[in-house]
Amino acid sequence: MPRCPSCGFEGELGSFKQLRGNWKYNFYTVYRLQCPVCGSVFNYYVGISPRGKPSSFTIASKPRPQARK
Figure 1: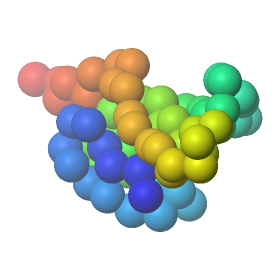
Figure 2: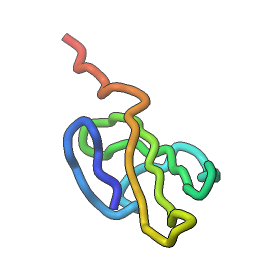
Figure 3: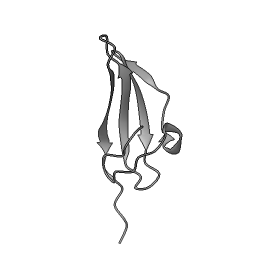
């Protein structure tokens, strides 16, 4: 389950907006997602290592949009 690195919102993959098609990076499948709560953009990596261990993590790529004054 992806978790937003900015606000902590956690949900199913379908509850986030997918900004582009997924791609492979080594044994990971990478998804570029946007949080529905705060709008922050991040990459979600999920896969199974060559040793058979499930692995997933997120990397923030764009900060949360600032509110206009």
